[in-house]
Length: 321
Length: 246
Image 1 (cartoon, rainbow over the protein chains, first blue to last red):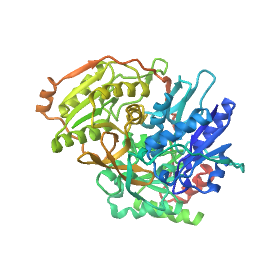
Image 2: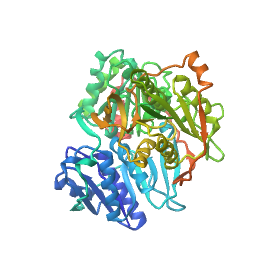
Image 3: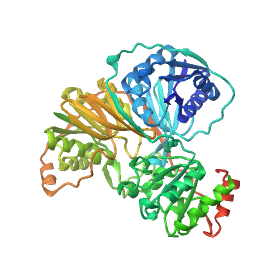
């Protein structure tokens, strides 16, 4: 028996959510009295793979096949299922990110494993195997019992603080039986916003709403974000009117983010927006309307004109750094 | 071409989230139910657009009790041709996916659309599970879907960007914003929906691999600390020294 973790990578770099998943998997393994094995698919340097030991992986299985540099759900499922068999894994851990959403449910169906996605707690094994997950778009939690022997858990990104050690994992090459014919979905082009922190992994997010009046004023948000090393986001009306791209839209029908710090500028805080951000550890709201509902969900607030407050805030942060 | 759209009943996006029966049940009092927005605005409307431009039959399926019929009728009013309701209250994603796969196997669909997730359980599981059970390719979180013969070109969201993929039908696709624009059913659609076929089928045997034992609400915030707009330095100091986030 063991715990298998799908450690997601892009361009040879292991993603932050993969470290979180490995650490989570190692803790589950400890609870079950077994060890954690991470599985990495595609090209990645040995140091990257060994470093998964820092988060508790005893062993890393690596499939160094360049065809796996982009995710193909059918093929990834086949490989993960093969690794589950060879490791005798009973629990499989994923990050609940875009790749996890493409693969984890398939793996769960193949293994006939109970599936919990968006997990925000370690399993409680005192009475069954209960995992807490985010439901109602972040407005509540459900405690879900997994009844089956095989279990698949996809953890919410940015939820489990990393506690790295110096331990190194033993890296083993893994050679599953896959052929070109297994690749049904072919990637024809990729458009990435390079050099920026993915929104769901960012520690700090600076977000703008209609209060900024137009896309020409987005420099305010970007300057503040830059001073903090933060990712930028926006509310739904801003994405709907095309001021900002849809992939920056945070809220019930957009992305859910759980950063350490969420700064909302000129966002009133409709219930649908709050759903996407209320997992943030600290929320700062800057809005000129003292009645904005967002203040009720905030830790710190400034009632004032964003066009005056934000440049001052950016300057003060630059001074601190 | 035959398209299956999977729809689910969810509380309205503005519904108050509360629980009853010792926090084991969602409190439905005063709550309005809708078609899960991703299922309706993106999956269903894109299927209807394909029907209008290329010619297709659009089937709907929902797994749920008689209380789901109003949302099925609304989906029919928007333009779905026939509907299937698998009569069960089970909430486990594997159980639900098994029911949908069972139906789809008999019908040989070219396309199966789901929403990217429901806004109540946020499982994001059904599309991938149905694809696996039917041994079909699955493209998740699609923002654009174009069809040329039997080859689909799909834009899907990835971390920090977008990817364009090509796949040959049949395929399962989970849909999000960008696929289509929300529609409002017209009076003719509403009238026509009353007589469109809605078959109630009994579930096949399958395991419910998970059960929700209880719900909880997040702890209440302590209350906002207001800082004067003339004293931005104070906010920076609090974020650094008190909250320790910068």
